Length: 330
Ligand code: BEZ
Ligand code: FE
Image (cartoon, rainbow, N blue to C red):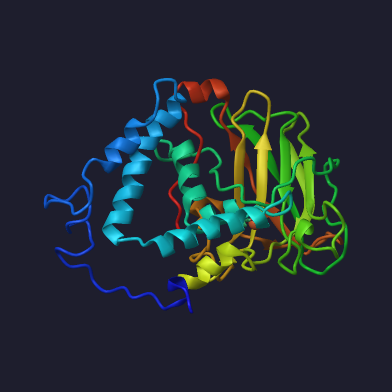
């Protein structure tokens, strides 16, 4: 027999007195609930006095929202069992090369939302520090360290070689930052990260670079390619059930860090990309959209990309200068 989630969803409008927040089943209803009115409070009250402080703060809201959600939508045991199996499947599929749990939160926009919450928009407009964006599940620690001017391309698989360059500076003073680490990773032209693809050498299209006193950097990488997030697992099934596509607009990932500065996890996006306004994980922000320019006179690269990173000193952050995240545009 087909499970409920394999049937097309019946999104009949919610009417008063049925299953919506205005119905009789939610605790927020003014009408008497048909369920035990003390149940949710009893679950919340089970937390003991020595509970972890942050959890004790978070759990009442989470439990209340979850219970209200179940009551309002009349979630059945069969549907709940499917959610349990879904989570278990995410766990079974995850290892050091695949993070299905993170992928699930990403397609619901939760990583992008907490990124926005963590790094709040600087209150004043005008110049902003480099905007953050989600890490995603494909970062790997210990990428190779290369001298400036090197290439991260370990195997020729086609693609548009790009000379990327710019500076890393202190957002407040404008001074160059010495010894800032630029950690970069992106997919090959086939849309796969090296850990997803046995045909690519280990650590292909990844690298770390350290800025000299000038704060300037330069290296060779590829103009990125749009690609689908992995959709052969539970997160992919979920996208399908929601009639959603898995595509991400072409992007390059970075973590920029330096002693005394707030690290910036970010991505830059190619303006020409058709998926820019329709990112499956909702991570695009306007200031991270860049233009790749055709490059002449460099036999190694056909494209040029200049991008400057501006970091906020930890001390300045304490005094109210915020890291630069803006509201997602896709
Ligand atoms: C990525 O850009 O690598 C990514 C982000 C979120 C989910 C899947 C992939
Ligand atoms: Fe990516």
